[in-house]
Image (tube, rainbow, N blue to C red; front, side, top):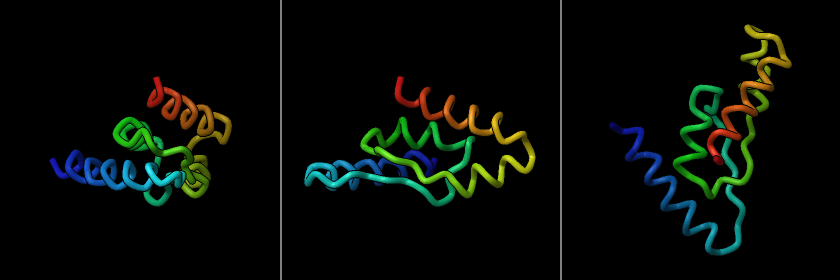
Length: 79
């Protein structure tokens, strides 16, 4: 519902910013469950700041497993 509308707005802004040669970064509130959706929805994003979420999630899962999960999600968004 709102998710698609909101990411559509992000995409429009990202397109405008990228057209000026400015790199788009994402960060706050990203986690392993939503990072793929955001990267697929806004392909102009070139960097994700996931450090806080990565450390938080690794408290529940092994650190290496958490890193692998994030890499899997981000790579899947770019296929």
